[in-house]
Length: 403
Image 1 (cartoon, rainbow, N blue to C red):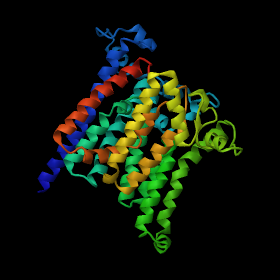
Image 2 (image 1 turned 90 degrees about the horizontal axis):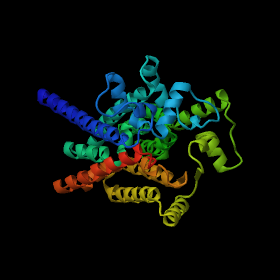
Image 3 (image 1 turned 120 degrees about the horizontal axis):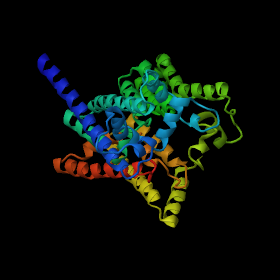
Image 4 (image 1 turned 135 degrees about the horizontal axis):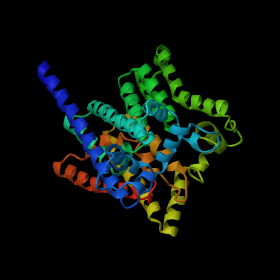
């Protein structure tokens, strides 16, 4: 029996690694092929995609690393090589991804490769934690289907690009798992790390509050008995506070602005120089933001706007049909992430990066694995998602769509 259990665990590990490796290779080969059409970086312009150059390491860098150097990835390269600079927009990006990439860079590894390795490993570990999270409520096969649905979702290619999504989702999944297991100390640690990775880490307080309330038997008497567990809530704002202290106190980038809600958000939670990364940022009621984005799309007939709106509406529909199959803590977390994502307008398309922000509500894919039960349905969804994944990589590498 013990031998069978070990063999079962090893089989699962191989399957998870296999899924990760498949998507890692698929996305890398697609990005490399499309970079031929748009050689953006200097190394892409100087070195041909084919045949391999005499210096094999430089050629491999050109083929598998350089094509990912677009949009926010360029900012992370700049921060890793030059550090944070007050007022230039770099402080819009939280530091943990950079800190974890720094050891490789310090050892002489190329900055782009350091970021890509860190992100790829974070994605692999995240998939393992996501599977463990799925197994709390689902059978093994349904858990693996959830994993496939997530990794082949068109926007999920950003999990394999030098972005912070996979690292954040790793901490978020670990926090949700710890909450379900009532391991409040671990939950606090992961929520703190999430806050050092992205601003959305503070919203993990919502499922934590629900988990603590349930552990307290939904009574004030229970809260009094478990008051020490409730101290874990302090971790939710801790990452943001620490980063704000560093930005304002050490880098001397502005000061806290209490004159308006927008001013406080951008001085305390985000960065006063965030507009230098993406112009025209603001927080609105989600329905107001949706009306503005829809109006922009209709009047401009811009493909980017329609793509973002389409993904946004599709994701909300997926959340709705998955609702009944989701644990309450997952519902709360996903709902908050979706509302915040739709409340943020930025850039000329208003809902710039909306699909990537919605992907942070990854528990939705746990519910979808229960909705999609028939074998043919699963094949249909995968067959639709993989071409979409490749299409978005094409748009990304050609600088035609901001993920």
